[in-house]
Length: 165
Image (cartoon, rainbow, N blue to C red; front, side, top):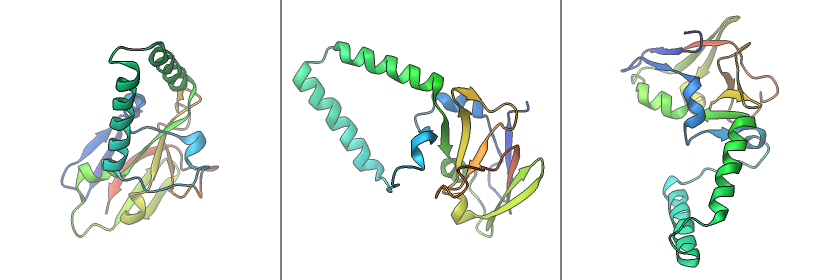
């Protein structure tokens, strides 16, 4: 139960977060390259269209069978998951909790104390949940990174809960 993080406060739904299952989530991002590359706001529809288009092109060119390249891509993905450093955007969790209209601040509760972040800035947070393929057991269960990467070297650690105020 040490890995479960509560999300409460001025929200319509109090939720719990389990970082142990995020490795299987398609929203996970590679933290080794996330802050280094120039971040662009991606249009989800455009991204979906490009993915489907790429798949369609592959089926036209190679047929609807699974060519050997797909097997090697799956092997590479598995290797990446077992050795990568990953995070997940905080915004979907914040949206699912549905903060009340008068809420303005996210409180990050840590072992050392609390940190307050405006809700608009909280939407851009990234929750790191693995480092080199391993869960963050010693000083986790998550690290909190600001979306602009200003604390990528010294993330907020030992997070116990999130409260909306």
